[in-house]
Image (cartoon, rainbow, N blue to C red; front, side, top):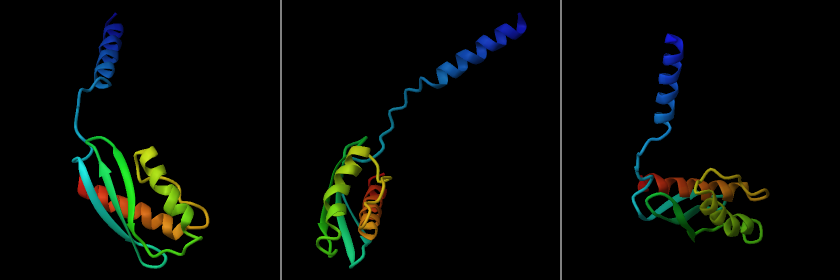
Length: 113
């Protein structure tokens, strides 16, 4: 009987731990700028965040090679917003540009914390 009571008490503690009511914000809402080195120079982004999510990513400056970097420049910002994270896969064929965008977004998000 003693073991049964201990088991019930443990289960209750585990259940309560999963019901945390923390409402901490992930970000300070606003628009932040980040820059990282791309294949042909710096890539600069503006990242807009709410308290809890990445709501927009815009590339504001870049000197990447047209035609080669286009997929990363066009697709990666939307993928980051959709994932609500800079931890997304790079775009094949334009890895340097992808990494620059990801690193620039990370730099912007560091400011937002």
